[in-house]
Length: 130
Image (cartoon, rainbow, N blue to C red; front, side):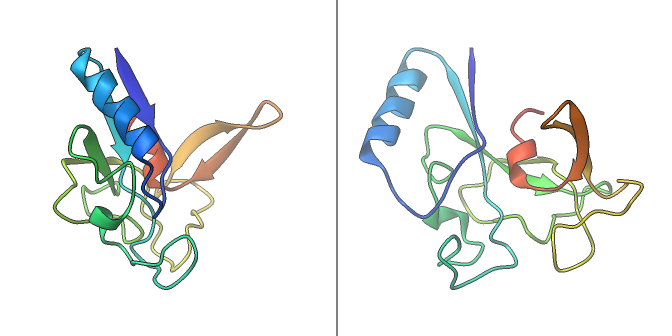
């Protein structure tokens, strides 16, 4: 069994941490996205920049934390980094300062989207499923 946590932020939750610890104690693998603050700092969502050890649940040691890599195994500029990252997986790597993708999506992940559609997107939230 696997729990995919494509969520996160700067707020530590003792209840979420307890649930993760309980899941791991029962043999469930917990995988968390590292976060998308690699280009940001000082915002509400990214007060600590790209330091993954400041964001949760990615910094909890019980889980596997996954950062984003681009199509050539390079670190995606938006991806959080640091000692809590265990592995890197495809998440897209737009070359601009935004998370906008090329029209051919060669630098992003093509995913299902609302209203039975598809969207080219980038982010560490797409990484844990790999």
